Length: 169
Image (cartoon, rainbow, N blue to C red; front, side):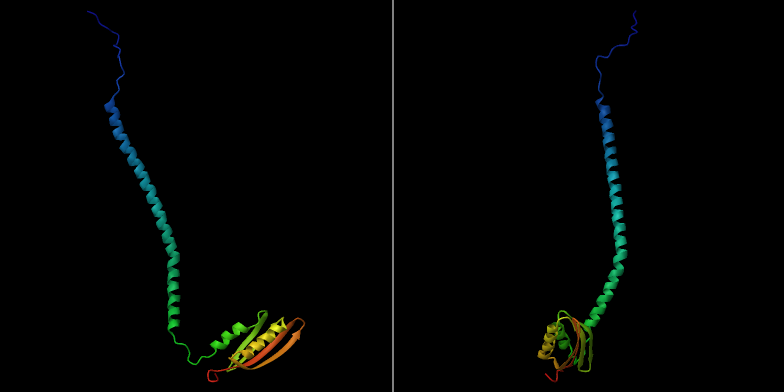
């Protein structure tokens, strides 16, 4: 009898398809679960930062909204209040806005009873003359008196006039 002590040579390297398929069947789902888990964690962190940003903005805007509602309530209350009957100075005051000299400055403006007193200064005397003439031409004023004092280039003026009431119109 003969004993062969030499190992037999394998003729081919055998590839274990079943083992590789089993390894891939385990690794691919584990990797997918890991990727999805990481994605969900990062999405959760993003949503939490967005929520905290919105909460901090709410801390700023809610008091402002309350303040806005208070102001809106005040405005609505003022809009509901009736105007003073017989108030006839809207027209004269509005008219003064259109006829005031462009390069002039009104220093003092006062109304007492039906008397208007305007104190101011201008650099151009012609504009003062136009202003006085506009007051004369206006239907709101009568008895216009002009006192002027010239200091170098500036003309200081005081104009007194009576405001025409609704009864006179």
